[in-house]
Length: 453
Image: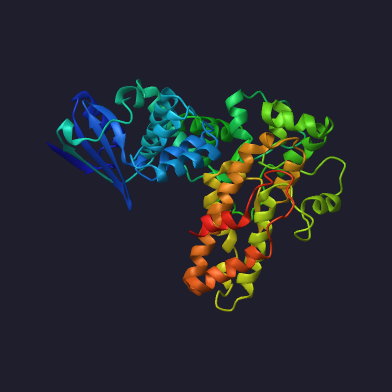
């Protein structure tokens, strides 16, 4: 049996409900524009999704949800590449004791549910259900009851239709809209509302907020709608939400900086981890503000060394310096030609990356250079590597992707060999042995070789 039509006539929830009531088995294909998702359904339950087919999708979502550190994902990927048995990365992590089977199963199921919720936002498109034999379906990676997914009663679905008028999709960007000083009073927010509010830096999109909090799509959308209705948040226009935009919460953050800083760096670091209300408000906008008692000049000197001898706090600073040297070399190369279209080249490359690595939001693009000062200042306050490990891993992952995309672009414009020589020159300007306070064994040459592969 085949069933097909347009989503404007038959919304996806109604199609899924029909398949669930009939306990049907087969593949439901949903498309909108160039996007297509296939849901495998067995006896009226969703058991697989094509959204999970992307290489390392499981590893990426485990890292983004904070279930497993990126360093352990990298180790599992290396083992997977060397494995002759074709084991999946989730299986390797379970075998190594990094996660339990229940954690893996729950994370996958939550991710599939999130992907399906993303489909509910498609206003136009087509669907087609093809009945099939259960033996033709792949092994189940989840078993999702459609009934609860479709909001057991209509009230939640009615609420969803109202919410999407304010929060249309995962690409929307919101910033903090602080009240005037005259109107300011203590905010009576729930824990989850604080978690969302402090991520509204005018740069991270809704999808990235969902990934970094681990909240469900519905819950995140509901909280954003509540914050907007309360006048605490506002949607940013596409041109405002770009990499060069100022953080929407900067004014509110500045007013709270003295209050948080009065207790010193150690207390502030503890507050960042514990998430106390004043600290969370201080972090609104995603930035840490100026360091305590230091002038801007002193801070810049502390985190922006002039050459290899001065060293860096972390490899993030070293990679940032190398990247900026590379951008200068590209800008000076007539064949690469920084024209009007490249006015925000680095920002255009960086913006999608930081949405996938939300803990890297302490890095910022200024013109066509990457500013790592805030990250290095944050790291300088830490007493050990573990304190900043999560932020460090996201920052290094984001930098690797940025180098990779820049290398691909340079190869297109300059040719592969010329691009390789230019990247090698930027790398060699920072020889082995550059002093690092943390991650002292880091090798820039290995990092760039992997990014350029």
